[in-house]
Image (cartoon, rainbow, N blue to C red; front, top):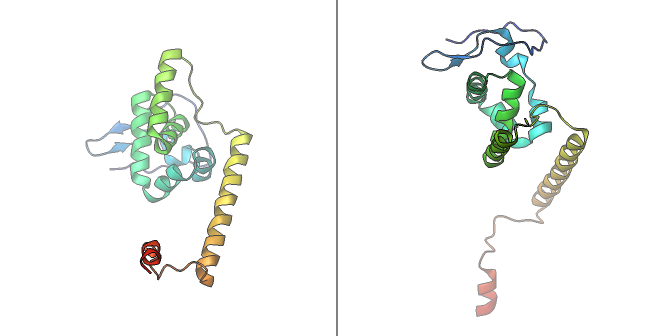
Length: 161
């Protein structure tokens, strides 16, 4: 059983009722815990890149369950839980190292705020990747790159002849 959320463009940093496990899945206790209360897919992309974004789009139920479980176990709001899960999905080893550093120093890493420099880097890398993909597709379409021939052992043929 999953609670239907009626939230409309509001964000809450108030104490939450926390998600609860109903024996099968994590369910929300209030509108402040619903997916609409958190940040969108675009922010996930800008802050953490394509890996968590793709998982969020193509595996929304698994993503939602991970966020709710994190909220319940860490007693944090939805944005913090999403930030942690996005960072974890991008690179679990780095996330774990960051958590260990937080525990050691007592200083919490900000998983939610987006820096202008980060946005610029993501947009530049995305533009370069799209340019590369466009050039590659154009070369395949024009026949410059031909996958129908197996060129793997051409050097052996040249050695024999």
